[in-house]
Image (cartoon, rainbow, N blue to C red; front, side, top):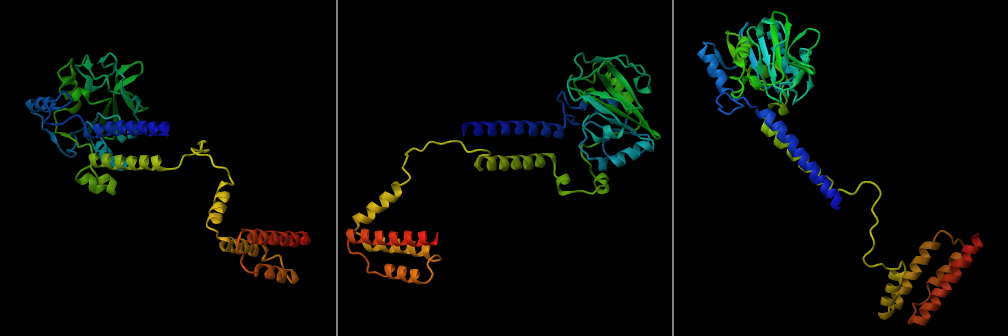
Length: 345
């Protein structure tokens, strides 16, 4: 029992850690007003000082830039963004978990912890790396692998930090993580120059991690998809708690464990105890009725004709008045039962 409870506790702990990771990712680390090292306040002020129209919002008119630092949409909700890129828009996605990576044939090689050295050189020939000699990225950003139409930049032997893909009249840049845009890393090396090259000086809109407004209207929405991430985490936790409670209260699976009896009792002890109680109470009539009822039920289908009449006469005899008469009546019925059954054989 202790082993099973310990297992359930560990399952609950692991489930809590998983939910915490999902919750942190869904909450994001790039708040517009945050001065936290993971926020993006410095980036927004940087673009504003350069005269760039940068704000939170929906897809701008092409050739504007749409930046997704976190993306929790489903593939159906991404179709509108892909169509916008094909019409001439510039897309920047910094979340390797986004379904857009698969749409542009880019796959994470290593989800996190891909950059031990962190300082990277372009090693590619695209307009976005013009004038950029080095950038510094977070150690938790992912390594990426490009498809046949992608151009890898800032490569390492195991993969790349950035992949650029042309689609129709537009361009999509997919990054291994959002560290470049954060307050902590924007001023390091030539990160700011690279970010400015990526977003350009057209209208820049920072998209919400989830579909909003027209995007929601364009997709077939379910109740689950309408819930905020915090509410989803609570629902999942309640489900896990209910499952763990059911497991803790359920029967053991497999062969039952041997459990020694605290007070071993011989198999016939109950019969003997009942007999002693009847004898102490001098319930000869009650015992006789129980015995005759048992014999009658057992022989009901086996005593046709004369034997049935003989049995009925034996059962109709007066009730015994003491133990001696009870023993005699029981012996007589037992002899009659054996004789009838032997004759049938």
